[in-house]
Image 1 (tube, helix red, strand yellow):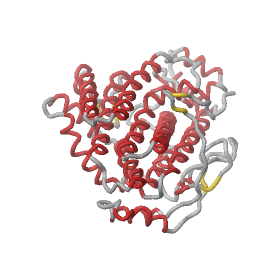
Image 2 (tube, one colour):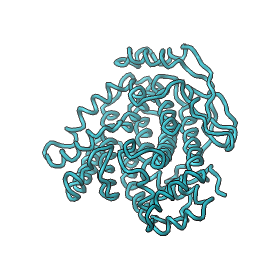
Image 3 (cartoon, one colour):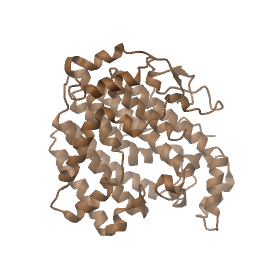
Image 4 (cartoon, one colour):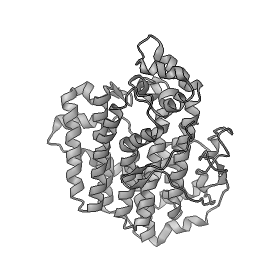
Length: 422
């Protein structure tokens, strides 16, 4: 039987699985966030973030990794459950549910500026392409990736005494959101999806030709702005992401309805399609803060493992949420032959599931039967454990940062993701 803990996999020299230790200090969220809100304009003056460590400490216990004994962790963050049989109680991650709005409150001004700049950076000289891009920009996305750029930028800048974000920090956030948007447009074309976040997709409104051109244009435009950052390390980092997108799509297309796909292959594909961009976002932000390589690599690890955890959670929700909640039909990936973590785990226990999938759901009701088998064979539970394992690794990578509202928000991002499957 395949263990939930994945083997060590190397992506372009990056080790997928790492280990680390935990800090046991937790901070009063209300005090820290309100201090940050009041001082958001001059957050670095007099090393203000260093004062936050004097606030009230709290002790919490949370469980993430399926392979370790539970330990106290930072800010109600993550570390360990006692074993696979103990259950997956996620309520201990936070005293109250975390919303995206509260996560990004400390960088709300940064995100507001980004939203204003996105339209102009795409280019007003292409009205049709602009309209197509606007369809995605206005579709209710959380702006998670640029928010991570801002959070890591401000958290790492504390180490260097940098008092404000640079133009390059802000431009990086804009580039990252453009690349993400371009990838969504192309993904919807490849997947033949009619809905994105409950709205019609670009190719549904404008046709496939315009959708492909809109995605291409945004990739090209983002590359031009990327080159103008004049930082060869970041240029290589983000250029690799665009290559990874294509590699991920090819890998996925070549393994449709393949019941022999292994967990490691799934993780590699998930890295290419999701985690690569998030990891590049967080590392690039640290580079522009002037952090040394040990810190930038930790930020890469944080983004990578957060991205993998997010992908696993999304794949779980494809089985557990309704079409209304998902903004697309439930079970879409399975119906198209894209076998995700819950299916891979369920296939280990249920031979009948293999037969149904390999028939490509040719019989009426077979898709619903397959979904029920995934749920009844423990596929969902084991996928939850995998998501928590990656979340644990993400939290560990933040221990190099000083305590601040920005680090707290980065930790809460991990918690928020796991609360989606609580």
